[in-house]
Image (cartoon, rainbow, N blue to C red; front, side, top):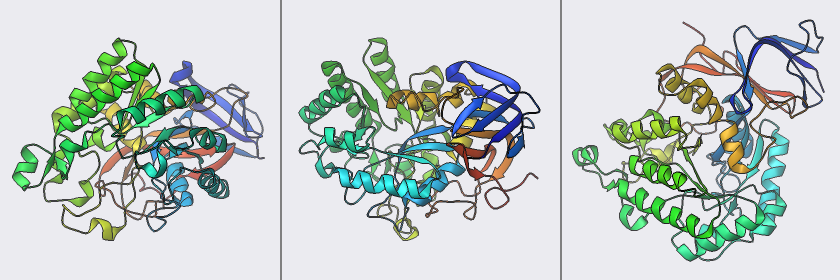
Length: 435
């Protein structure tokens, strides 16, 4: 294993209270050897920090890798490469596969594909119910034994409240979190975007914010009943943020995430019937966007999760009603958070914490999302000031479905290291140079 030395770099780990400029960091043998080595420390490769910051490797809680079953959209290998390009050293793979991740052999397949890819650590999430059908619990103990780090039916709400109760209790016994998609589908059925002024203007069927709010309220009530951990996925409405805030005040064991697109875009992005802006849950009005950002800032929302959802061009190239929902986001999640920092809506400490320590704590994985001597050499080097533009050619994902083509960002992952191995290094192919 090569000895990698980063000189004159700012070591920044909010979760550990570390903010140390001009450090020399040594990585070797897959571990962090030193965070404060002598400047003349030898190495097989020496990288000058030049104002960059070194943070714990980013952790993503919600990524649709599409393998097995939908490899025309994405594979474990291409998702891992896209994740590394976005600064992620660990991603949680959703069970939106075919067959779904409800049996150990599917877990083993994904882990084998991830080992072969080698770009990013891939942690499968097991299906909460068999086939994600919401009828009977999956064999959760066997799935955990095979390597699953969480249980979820991904983008499907668990309609049966008693089933969710049993899932929370069993997962609690296993020490594994449950991720829910909070939605009352009887309210949202048939909707294709947020129900509001924009949907009325476009003549499109809407999904009321109340569909999410009712789902969040139900899930929190069951978490309170069971006294078990609950993680609520991709929160998008102001009212849901307030429910989660109040639940935390009352001591209920609930955490929550938001997707980057719900921090950056509103339902106005759908104007012109742009199917690239059709995502799930739908983009909300600016007032909801502001409330979600505020919730992320004050800790009500614990982390940012990409919700990376590849779709083929043919699946997007339809009338808005028929187009598939979802967008690729692994390579723009960090940049989105950094844009909030530049706008003064989020501190740098909070932005980094919500992509590192926050998701790691939700998973209960103490080795992730932190930098410490002797710990895994999973780190990301960030250039806070690098300007770049999202282009189709720059993506490592197998799909190109994103409403951010042409969007200008400042800040990017410049180097990603997993187990001491450089798995991504920015170059002219991956990013547009400064202008």
